[in-house]
Image (cartoon, rainbow, N blue to C red; front, side):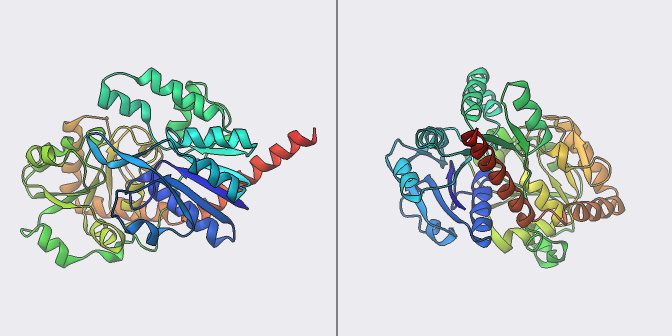
Length: 376
């Protein structure tokens, strides 16, 4: 099968869309298919992009998003349509379509190529966070883009409910895999723990972008707990403000690969604060690492965290609730161990290979439906 993956983000970017697009391309190659990726060009001078790709990548000219230079936005270009014509795909995969993906959808429609759209970003929630308005306009765009697809794949039951409520048709659930070979409890590193928490504190970690929509400032109360050390992994525009809001926290910057896996396994508690997660991959990576989770009872974590068994769900944007949940786990090492073991067991079979095979099955269903229409 020939597939063009049109994605709003791709490595060296570090985010859920980029990671999922990369894993999708890898799995397609592993299964003998022929993917091509079309993505915004990385920042000039960034040589990491080509080395990470398992298949050919066509880069479309891009500019940094004002105020958030880590995010690149694709500019209008003929390269996208030319790539589709040259690659002759059986299906076009649109990863979190909003700018480049909209053009990909239009090009696929003109060429008569089936399109599968993957909903991954709560753009309406981001509109509320960054603009204080615009939620209705964001939903109009989401509905327009995804209604044009042959199929939209959604990562969680919360996302499914949101899209159904806003009139998006032809939806199926497609979750995300986790690299259980990389993220595992055995990587817990006592030397690293002594460096991060030299007084033997309980380590509460966050991993992800440092951006307003993540509401990491909700960890301020956790920083005030006795015997606790907060460790933040990631970068982004909110870092200067967070350094003031989280006194005593350790900021490790962006980490990846085996280094990130070692850090995850060395946490005692993983705390996620963002209320707009359509899935929340870092929660799965923490669970695979045998670490109990505290997360908001909203979006993707509702599917991932079994409250009272693998972690604790708290009301969204409630700093006191986050602090109290963390405190209850700090005070009970046995409970932490039980939650961590249960979380590890829960995600053990959620490999990217299994998730990738589901995706290929969805491609097959879309192609079969197209052939049925033509035959009729």
